[in-house]
Image (cartoon, rainbow, N blue to C red; front, side, top):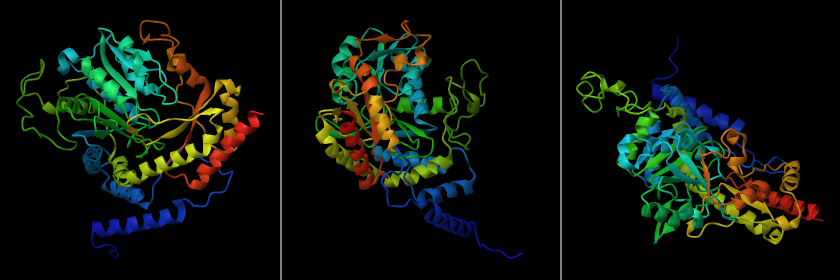
Length: 451
């Protein structure tokens, strides 16, 4: 039998060369857009580099968290500007971990316990709110603003009570909430701030001449790497912080709740595997099987992380294209602002847009659903602003109007968004032709349906 390769490295190089050829032949998207072709609200943007990285991880066959995960966490933390970043299997899991760690007894008087309150909004994706309820804390819902679609900060003081322990909010579709006011409010009242940054990775915000990425202003930030998001691993998410105690707790809750900090595949990292005293266990009980919290297994696989390492290299270009597409669409729709409310970036921000939000003006007499149906019939995907008003959903049927949650005010803008708002995509794979076609169809819909 003849030997084809002289080494594993040689074999890998040939396999990846074939993968690259496969991408060019079968997966590379054609640049030509024909009006009427389907325009998705979002999609992954990749090339042969991601496919070759995935192949590399597959050939390692490590499968769980490993060298690519470590590389991504280090590079991502450096890029976004934090000390600690930890991969998880989704953005929703990132939110779960972010909230879970704040229930840890190590936080003493700042530990979130059952019946403690967390200020948030009902106009949100459900997994921003779900961990609050799942841990027995009380979400306190306040209204949002239009056309920023973020928390109305004038309601914060009214939402405060002696039980308030945290604020947990998302930056809506890339548009940062008023971080200056929210952060000052949290500091004034000694509250935790969790930034759900899943739809805003790459957005920037400035406070007192200091500019940082969203997700890094609060105590904990979270990101999602689901395919429609700013960058992708297929599934995947990240939890990040500058706080060394929270960093340690994130690792514990993510990795089964264990007390041990040994990296995956390593034993006795701390040098004290068999000489500790933990709880009521016998002295010297194997530290790898000591559990200090009720945790989960939410680790990412190395195959996902390998894709992320390549996506991170492209990410600055992704951000700029999203901004370009958003600006182009906004300019194209300015002449129908008498019928539609166009989005506005938050003051002191430079968003990395996830989508382009549009609200139908009630005085126009046009129903949102009629407009989105027209747009969809012309092969353009639309999406609503997630739950619209989460309290109105079936998941609240058994707890509606109970003490499990609290509402401050009448949520008038939340109701407005539920009935009048939708969005379309601006992801970096969109060409000028797609943006222009999308604008033309939206304007046609306005002109035809408002006659």
